[in-house]
Image: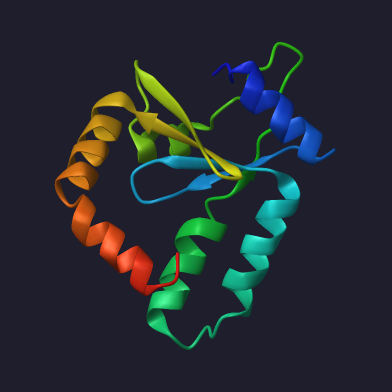
Length: 131
């Protein structure tokens, strides 16, 4: 899969190491290596006695893989991650802060529609959390 130049340049500027690709709920996330290390540290230092923490660790950390960018600006998405995100034909590559999300286009459109329909509720919850 070819990354747009602006995302590729930013990922390469932020780290000399290959970025890390992992699962999110309905998509994949590509993190600069150093950002991934921080996320992994936070996940792995949380209490392993909590079942929800175990589930997050298992889902996000165990699914993570190095994802080098080749000389043509492409990444190779492993089959198990493509299947998780249902990446087939039309893929949306979305910059979201420090990460790049890879979505199946119909799922991305559905997510945006759902967010738009609940925007006020989501915005209020974000404000309550200090965002």
